[in-house]
Amino acid sequence: MPFDLNEEQRAFQDMARQFASEEMAPFAAGWDEDCVFPVETLRKAAALGLAGIYVRESSGGSGLARLDAAVIFEELAAACTSTAAYLSIHNMVAWMIDSFAGDALREQYLPKLLTMEHFASYCLTEPGSGSDAASLKTTAVREGDSYRLNGSKAFISGGGRSDVYLVMCRTGGPEAEGISALLVPKGTEGISFGKQEKKLGWNSQPTAAVIFEDARVPVTNLLGREGEGFKFAMMGLDGGRVNIAACSLGGARACLEAAREHMTVRRQFGKSLSSFQALQFRYADMATELEAARLMVWRAATALDRDAADKTLACAMAKRFATDAAFQICNDALQLHGGYGYIRDYPVERFLRDVRVHQILEGTNEIMRVIIARRLLDE
Image 1 (cartoon, rainbow, N blue to C red):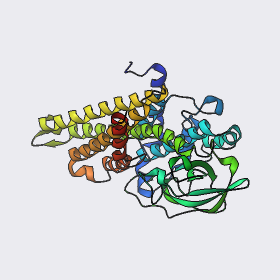
Image 2: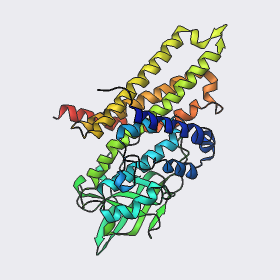
Image 3: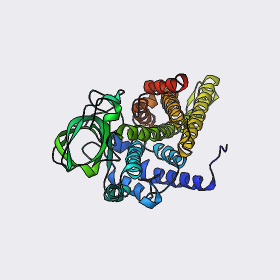
Image 4: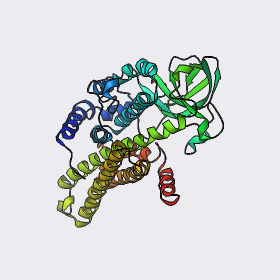
């Protein structure tokens, strides 16, 4: 098992790092402060192939591996975790369309998503169903050649701004087998949006409820067949968990680097902070946790690339470990900065706020433990 990136992967890494340092890092604090959704920056990323990283080349995507994507998302997130996380969600939707939609639907929606002329949102969570995703209440009743869609989705990244919404809805019975996946364009009559949420972090991406009131959606906008939506949603989330874990790595790495710089220049009691053994030990633990998390993320991404039997387990483990470790690294970096870490002139507090939600979304880390335990104990 190789632990080093190959020449091609290092090229992707360098490209993403350069883009992040030039097009994202100088503006990230302003995006956060003013809640700016950086449309033009995202479109520049799309021009580099970053809107369909693992969409097939035959469909217009970059055709890269999940490991390649993890490397890229870490680099982008080290500049702006919030924006990188939105891009990861957009990629997930594009991949689901490429993988599960028919040719006509794929040709209708993918081209503009891959240039980010259009933006995409993933709609699973509801006001009454978060961790218990299979209990969702949004319904799609078939009437002739269309579905009548009613219900609401909560905490949707891109809500109100995205042009395309991939909606998990109930077309059948009350179990997971009754859930289907529909593509709903923003201009559909009967779709509306809640207020923009005021959040702790992730301020460079809009977040709002998406509401459906007798919204008419063509039957041709169904992904796959009726009843396959929950399966598609979970397959999407396997990759989404690796992506968000990779974004956590980027935020944590940025904080680790900031802590190192601060420790070498900040002096107390006549010597630099880096001279105190207690702080050396803390920094060593931070670096070790980051390295362990990265290896788990790469292992999970490789499991997806190989379609390994244990891929869901590997993704859940990586997401749980990496997002917990990353938040702790950011928190420790803030502590090492002392009072400076708590003010917005320094980037550590922004990374801490942005990575915190990664322990909640794409399945809470408590649900990751449920998945892990079931896979290990029920077999």
